[in-house]
Every structure is written in structure tokens, then in C-alpha cells.
Amino acid sequence: MDKKFNKALKKIAMPELEPDVRNKNFEEVSLGYTVEMAINEAERCLNCKHKPCVNGCPVNVRIPEFIEKIVSKEFEEAYSIIKTTNTLPAVCGRVCPQETQCESKCVRGIKGEPVAIGRLERFVADYHLNNNSTKTEKPHSNGIKVAVVGAGPAGLSCAGDLAVLGYDVTVFEAFHSAGGVLVYGIPQFRLPKEIVEKEVSALKELGVKIETNMVIGKILSVDELFEQGFKACFIGSGAGLPRFMGIDGEGLVGVFSANEYLTRTNLMKAYNNKYDTPIMHSSAVAVVGGGNVAMDAARCAKRIGAEKVYVIYRRTFDEMPARKEEVHHAIDEGIIFKCLSNPVRILGDKDGRVKAVECIEMELGEQDSSGRRFPYEKKNSEFLIEVQSVIMAIGTSPNPLIRNTTMGIETNKKGCFVVDDYMQTTKDGVFAGGDAVTGAATVILAMGAGKKAAKGIDEYLQLKK
Image (cartoon, rainbow, N blue to C red):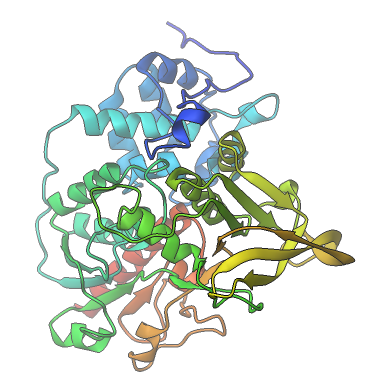
């Protein structure tokens, strides 16, 4: 019997909470596919022989294979296929920029919309988490200890792959909860923390040990980890050092880095009255930047109670690096976008608190090295936006703590670790990946680096035998 084929040019829409409801709470916005929706969408897949979508995925998920299992209602088999290459499928199905990766290569996108690969991955992962109670079988241990610094996407991916190979893996996490940016940076309404906890629990079933409140570089150095018997170390400490613009007024009360604001909101649950986490409640907030972090900060500020939330971005919507879906959600929720604008100073009142941000209009010139048109200031175009808080979401860089306490490890001028093709740093036995190497990037790219490093560590340790 021939496979049923869905010729629809558009993806099956995913149900969402209504904008005027969701912008007042932290419940997940996208509600996921039903079984019927997932099967209908899976039937849009052509199951191409050359599988271009797989090449577009940084961890090479076997996409047509798992989608084919959805069509035949073999959801657990679909999950098993995804897990062969992806450590965190429920996470990736929610926060990966599929539109610029796997879905951008989908043949169905030539005449219509690509197959909703991310939504299908989320469906499969959620189905497994909600319906399967079988514990993961712990691999036989080879007795070799490997340390992983940072329990974010890169560290968890590396730890999972090494555990499957039988290594005795311990993850050292600075915060009190595992997950890295997944728990401190990405809001509950985009990625429920319960999902992250379930994914981490699956790694623990593989034998991965996680030690929280462990700041490597302060409590223990990388060198001391080797003295404790670890034979290799992976650094996936991310890029948590915020950047500021260097303009007047950044020291005023009410100016935050997006990292601090999101950490208070998400990891420390400032949005929940059960938690005594201090956070500023302002009626008007300005968020500077145009990436996913800026969208997250703006949408959090709206939910915490701000009447007006402005996103100030120096280019246009076309150049905005945030996911189109997140921008769309932000607009629906009432976020005000001030494109082709850039802050030049922040004004304060007599008590040293933010009262306004002064901006200047911008215009675009020729393309710069990023491929986007370079913004120039328009003379005599300054204007004021009255706000009580300003959140800077203009990027981050790696924390210098580890590089400053580790002998023989090199970084580039941006403070990122220098690695070879096997993800090994300039220090023997020390590997690195994710934002600590690339600077701030996506979850899935960090996971891809973690997987590559796990392979490099395995090859390194096999040669050491």
C-alpha cells in the first residue's frame, strides 16, 4: 500500500495561547501538535533519498526516518531514532532555529512551506516524556573519569555522548540547577523548566553525575580536576559576561543586562510570588537589541507587568537576527518595536534612577561583514522615550575566570577558547565547545560542538591507553 501524501503547501499550524491571555502569564505559548496534527504534517514529507534536511542539522538528526515512523504511528521508534544523535530533543523541538537550518534545506520549501521538522521533533519528544516510564539502561562503565564544566547545552550533549560510550562523567555546574542558558536564559513560556529537568534526568539515568554550585576556576581549578583523577576535561561554560554600549547613564538604577534580568526572572522565578526574588517592576521598559535574548527580555517585562515595552534596534525587521516566530509572538503580545533607532544616552532623575532613554534615528548603508547593511546615524534626529528600566541585550562574551586560572590554555581577542579540529584546546586533555568557543550562538550549535568534543575526547583517551 502506497504511503499517503499530504500535498498541502503550508505547515499544519500549531495551537497557541491567545496573545492577550499569554502576555499576562508564563504558561507555554505554543501548545504542541495533537497526534492527528503530527501525522498530517508528517505526511507532507517526501522522504527524499539525498536527505538535504539532515545536512542542515548541526547534530545530523535522521529526520526523514523519524518522520516516517510518525506516519506509521510508531512514536517511540521515532524517539529512539532522534536520540541516536540528539541528547535533548524536547528542548531542540522548542528553541532551535529550524527555519535557518534543517527546514531551510527541505525540498517542500521550494514551492510552499517546508515540513515542520521542529514541531514534529517536539511532538515525538513530548509523547515519549508523557507516555514512557521505562528507565534508560545504564551503559557498562570503562572506569575512565571525564570532567565536564558547565551543564548547558554543550556540556549536557558532551556528557550524554561520553556516558553512552561508558565513561564516568561528572558535570560541574556553577548555578544551583543544571541546564545553563536553558534554565536561566530562555523563559518558561518558551521552554518549560519541567522539560529541561526531564531531559537532565534521562542523562542521570545514563550515569552522568551533576554537581551544582561548583564554580570551576574558584572552588576547583581545571588543573585540580586532573589531580583528582579525571583524565580529560570539557569546558562548556558558555558566554555569560554581558556587554554594554558604553554610553552615558548605564550606571543608573534601572539599567540591567539581559543576563541579569532573565536570570532573576527565569532561574530565580521572580515572576512567581512564591519566590522572594527582587526585580524592578516598571510601567515602561526599553530593551536594546534585536536577537532572541532581546525578544525574551521584552516578553518577560510585559508579563511582569510593564504597560509599555519597547524594543530598540538599529536596523530593520529584515536584518533582525531573532527568530521570525519570536518576533511575531512579541508583536502579537503588544511589544512596541522602534527599528532604525539606537540609544545615545540614558537620562536619570535626581535620585539616580532611569527616567528616559535618548535615541537617534538610523539609516542603512552598504552591507557589512555580517551580511547586513551597516547602520548610520541621521543628524539631528534625536528623540526621547520615557522609561523606568533599560535592558541591554546586545551580546555576551565568555567569563574570564577559567582562562585566568588555567595554565597553558589560550583564548582569542574575544576571550573565546582556541580549539583544534577535535575541539581540543592548547592544553593537553582539555577540550572546549559551545559559546565558550564561538561566542553567543544557538543551543543546537552548542550541542553539535559538545558531540564533536565527545568524539575527540574518546579518540584522545583511546590513544592514551
